[in-house]
Length: 163
Image (tube, rainbow, N blue to C red):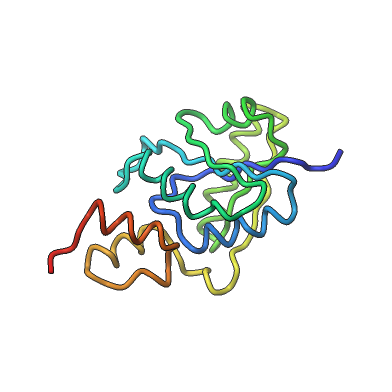
């Protein structure tokens, strides 16, 4: 059986150039990619679910065969609902691997057909993390090289900096 559909979940608070890079690379391997913006109720997000979905959708609008959706709840339930073949997770460091392996194994325990594929980011994005982007923005730093334009514009609209 060939792999047709990949689900790339995350809170994407906000989506970064590293996320975009992974989506573009995934879209060359799979017929269809679903970027699933998670409600992330366990995280203290800066952007609302609607805002995160908006900037992710706008940032990925040029990517063929890529669709952005939102979800709330267990990833395994979204996997079943969307009838995907695999979930894609990015790994930047060993600490990411330990956490993601634990989650992947738990999801497989909940649903034995659950499969996870791990991808490393491109070298230029190995350091990039949404938390760093938010911190740099809050401190008045330049984030244009770290995020797609819709993210930077959205942050400026929703959280204007004092002049």
